[in-house]
Image (cartoon, rainbow, N blue to C red):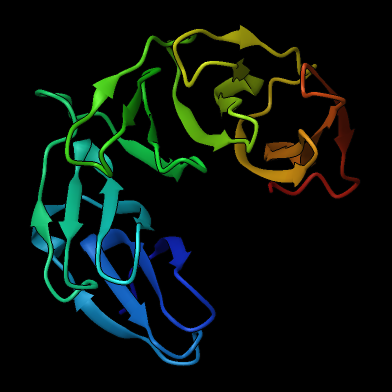
Amino acid sequence: SRALLTGVFMHDARLGWAVGHDEVVLRTRDGGLTWERVHSAPENEKPLLDVWFADARTGLAVGAYGRLLATTDGGDTWAPGQLYGDDDFHLNQIAAAADGTLFVAAEAGHLYRSSDRGATWQRLPSPYHGSFFGLLPLPDGTLLAFGLRGHLYRSPDGGRSWTAIPTGTDATLTCALDLGAGRFVVGGMDGTLLWSEGAGAAVRKQDLPDRKAI
């Protein structure tokens, strides 16, 4: 495939999947040394943006215009699903909490949660109407949501309520990583890095000298 790839998930050191435009799904069984294309549907014009697997066989892929695909055979076959009603917002990222709860970050301020590995979904109250590009569930149950124009939010209760975390930046936030002990780092455009302090109620900003997007 020559499709733009947008997301990757490794089940273990050898088995993993990557997704991208043309609704392509690739699979590796040797730690990424070689890949096979297990699904592609460019005629649907719905790029896939992220992928997640519960185990070696059961997984979900999400993407543009509300696209949701599910597999129960390790990616050999995929069936279309529906996230929530008639919603057709771009589904930008899928993330799993330690207890197995799934969350999806989407455009236009939409956030979703599933407590049954994606069989059913509920829409969460949203603190912001702009796009969210990701969610980061932390081990202590805290949930972070981040997106356009430096917006970063913290929820102590699985997305039922939210508090804004001042970031001091208008740069779009694109990714986040758990550092342990309640700490995290968020990356974004313009070389922006946000480091948590203490329990994550505040962050300090660092701008990388080359200003390249993270």
